[in-house]
Length: 267
Image (cartoon, rainbow, N blue to C red):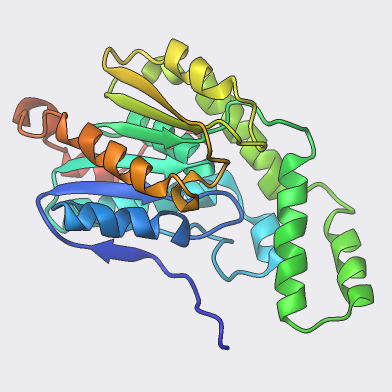
């Protein structure tokens, strides 16, 4: 069977738009089903894909940086602006949740939905192990022998991995600036998540400036919560949250197009 290459997606429905951001070492399929569900409820959804992700080689992934990913998030936001959408919420899983919080600090958004967004990781080796897992699967699909794969994996981790170190820096940067988050926030976390420190959602909740904020725990879900058994409940809960927002408050939701053309970058 031929592999399906993951691609960015856009599902156009109503005038309310949601930017959907995927996780580290993953691709747009993390949030595609959520996008389809929200489309069925009248929301336009756009899911970009970061440099080094999707079907990229492990070496491309390892050498991609937070600035690369951030530019892809900004491009996704700008894409919606240029298509005429002025009311944009942002939701992201894992790395995508961190980038969603960052976007709300830099741009005008209706709300932020961070899902399993790390402020700390469960173990120091977590990110390196994620890169190695991605690399092993990629190289198996290429048809390489176990000996070849192991040699290339050893080469991959023989030097610091820019993507891993960069992601740790990104998390630290966002955590240190949570007071800049003022939009409504709906924090989502799987209780069985073994990737991130489960104190992360509470840390986000306590540090953000937002006056409208909630944490929703999913007792049977792990890290990739959008694809797990409580997915249907998650989708409905996100829809209900989006329905509570003040989408019609034009004084707060109009976006300055000139500002989006010259984004302020942290890096």
